[in-house]
Image 1 (cartoon, rainbow, N blue to C red):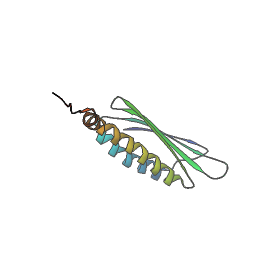
Image 2 (cartoon, rainbow, N blue to C red; image 1 turned 60 degrees about the vertical axis):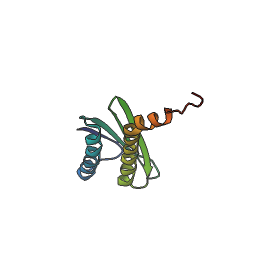
Image 3 (cartoon, rainbow, N blue to C red; image 1 turned 90 degrees about the vertical axis):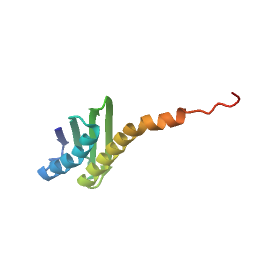
Image 4 (tube, rainbow, N blue to C red; image 1 turned 120 degrees about the vertical axis):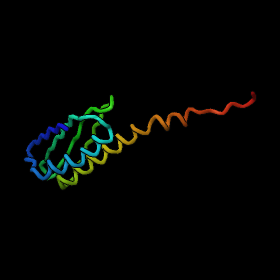
Length: 107
């Protein structure tokens, strides 16, 4: 996985990078392809951190953003949001098949 970690007014630590890589590797395994992930970290004047994650995989674009008072909590929330998006995308064909099945009456 290629991870681009960009911080605006935030210096990301190596432990944060390792934590993000381990969580995003799980998503990469689910998609089954090598990903290029861009993670942007920002801080506001009132000590609020925001994390944005963006990548393309399986022919679709995934992105999520989260804000929190803690940088690690913001990154965890953003990863969780992306994980839910990937899960929805993987199960979408099954749900569409069931929803489109109709029972015709009056042969």
